[in-house]
Image (cartoon, rainbow, N blue to C red; front, side, top):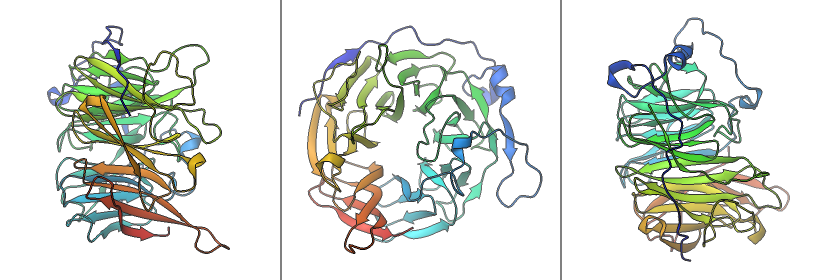
Length: 405
């Protein structure tokens, strides 16, 4: 399936700002935003009162604010990786042949971010955990106000976060109201960074160069967030549904993006795939049954609903979808190469009914987490959580870990 070549030139219509100086020469932050970010929650196990932080009602669902199951996976080498979810953190040091539980309970985690084999963070709607020893010990970090939804660290000290907004248990990316924060001390404290309205996702390749999803659009900065340039407008036109732009950085200055619509119907949900770099952005594929005014593509995305994205390099990525109309357990995935110029359909991911997270080291080697609906007992459906992996580019899949929450 050939990829679309609809290119959007980088436009100079992004939001600009002249922020005040930030700590330690880190990315610029406006004085107003910086003063509004305060500590609102003491670290786990540390006594003392916590300042109140207004929490949107949608964040609190059940005991942890996150849907049950495995949600995030990240490998930093073919041997070393972690998986997190609502009730546990798992780790492996032998490529998944064995998985160890590092923490368990009502953790409510939605995503992971490691910068090496030792330093990492795990984030939920109500908590941020950190480790400096590969997960042998996890400790809670003070939460700023607004509360953090997701983090992306450039080094052990410098990181960025999406915070606040209308994130919920089943949609941890905030469709509206999100803000961009930064830290220069590994997440002990945070300050606001100038950004377009309605921040939904962010990633940086170094302290100056980064990409941002906001209000369904894609933005780029080359000066640490002091100014942002619009790279892709996304879906335009009156009556267009709201979209969520999620991003994953790759290479020195490239990004893969997935723009997800909010008006799913009849087991179909709009989504559009992007690749962008210094020379511009291009839409690669789109869900075929929904109109997407302002975006031209020649390829269909995998399935009828979006799934996780895994950026392998600045030229290669894996995109996973789902296809309920195709039958239960249909989890198609595509390998995207040549910066989006070539899309190869790779069949279905075995052992899963739906995918929640993916981490591919190469086009051949990758891990996917998600759920499997077990119908072997006609009287009772069981939804198992699984980790599956492939070493041959999807020709075969192996279940490495399975449990019922």
